[in-house]
Amino acid sequence: MEQTGSLKLRVFNQAGQLVGPVSVNPVVKTDAEWKQQLTREQFQIARGKGTEAPFCGTLLDNHRDGVYTCVCCGLPLFTSAHKFNSMSGWPSFFQPIATENVKTHTDRSHGMVRVEILCARCDAHLGHVFTDGPKPTGDRHCVNSESLTFTDGTALASLADAAAG
Image (cartoon, rainbow, N blue to C red; front, side, top):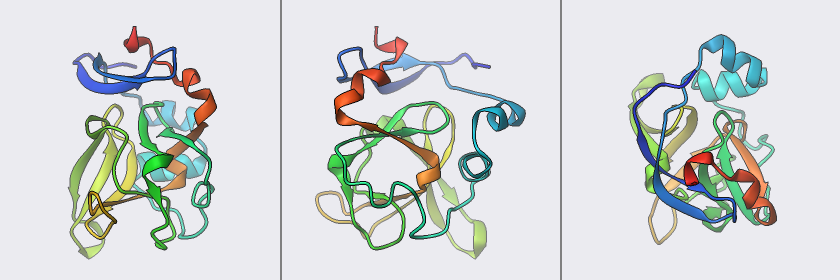
């Protein structure tokens, strides 16, 4: 089910180019709907704010050129050009593909204060952002592989969003 109320996000067009910001509706579904769409692990992490074990994620050692999208709604979140080896055990990026596409929230769970990162369109839990990353941003977006889908750089047109026109 889609909720009305427009967000301004960046998406891919039919030519495989990142465009925007364009107006898109948030994606809102029931837990039952998410469970039908996602694997058990994806649901536990992306919808339940879980964390995969370090050094086990399928995208940790992915070195191909391309784009990482939200496993729940397909919003482009990160690009391989911003990925780096943080030695943390999770895929890490020094910045999102577009600042509009990732939002943050203060996470006070597990007896600590961290900055949680979420998909701006569907609120999927991605991971956390820390300030110990490389230049130019100094940020380390530490992301669960289970929260992402990878699309090869030669297939970006397959990510075309209807909102791109």
